[in-house]
Length: 295
Image (cartoon, rainbow, N blue to C red; front, side, top):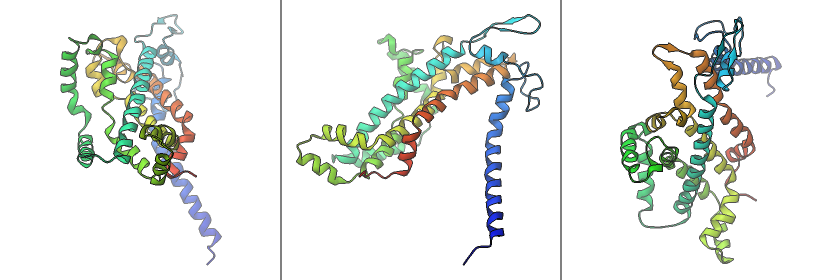
């Protein structure tokens, strides 16, 4: 049966219209924040297109003093670029650690048989159901006591926060485990016949085959950790040690809400995620579309 060309055109028009409308709907909050970052003053209300656009908020976010038309020089109130660097550094180190721990654990659960394997997997899944905010009191108490013995793991240190973030591996273990289990078991047998140890099979066979899923896990971990707020807000106190997610809250104090400066800092926080996503786009596409068995 041949479909009516007019009906086909109507369906295409409706599909494209729905997609455009959906994109506009989800992009509208971002456009509002972008508009606020270019408005004069620090107001959250106003026209979507600023009447007198200014780069004041962006200049202050980059740590550059801004001179207004009346000659007044405004100094940056907070070290936004230092906060951004702290966020990137902590997220990169923690994501790398999460990837290393979850990959090795997933290989053991997928390819090795040992007592208690099923119970441990079920426990990991149950633990993942509880939000991380439930642990903030315990985390603070642990590192407050630990800092008295090991100063570099005390509260208000980046190693303490990174060590806490390494616990976010349970979901990633399940993700990578599923990918490992989709790889043909004959590959393991062939490696054993050739005399390869489990570590050599993991290093030279499974890791190269699993690059797409590893890239996905790294990016998901990076996106979550660079924007994480509850635990970071409890462990980080000094201004110079804060991440951007925690430090940006300093713009919204009770006496005065600096919405314009906050909007510029909020948009800056998304730049590292965009760069990481674009850099690993090739692996993301193949990881979401390819199977586990490679030819």
